[in-house]
Length: 160
Picture 1 (cartoon, one colour):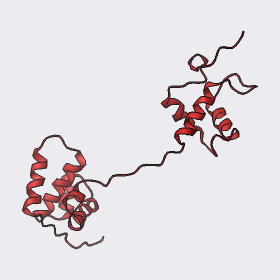
Picture 2 (cartoon, helix red, strand yellow; picture 1 turned 60 degrees about the vertical axis):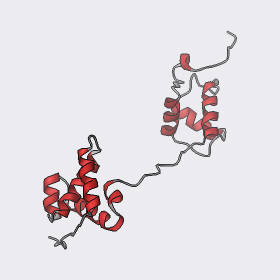
Picture 3 (cartoon, helix red, strand yellow; picture 1 turned 180 degrees about the horizontal axis):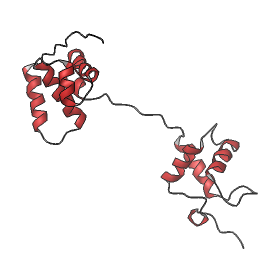
Picture 4 (tube, one colour; picture 1 turned 90 degrees about the horizontal axis):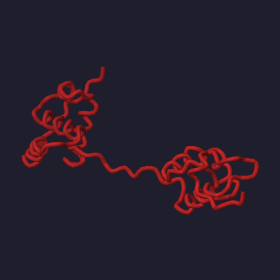
């Protein structure tokens, strides 16, 4: 079992008041409340394992909250950094070209568009360098297009 050096967290009077105000202020994210309670427990001199047991967190999580407070202050200890998210796989122009392709007649030999057919045709027609079926499925779903149901696809009138 590892033995950790006791984590010393000393909250400034302003930070402690800000934490108490946050806890009294109504609806907050559970993560933020737990982090605030962890900081208050650590500032009272409790060990990280004692605080963790009270809050149903791990000792490591409590130590990390205390370490972030010591290094970067209250805001960093309570709130997560913003995450940029994944970059878009398809550009707006590529999405429009794929939607236009799906709204046209399917290739000869096929009765209707399928997600797999859309993905392969988009690459063959060089609309995109490569694309997966899930990307196509999400794109079609976001535009409420179901090409496998012919009645939902917008097509020009054809002679019968």
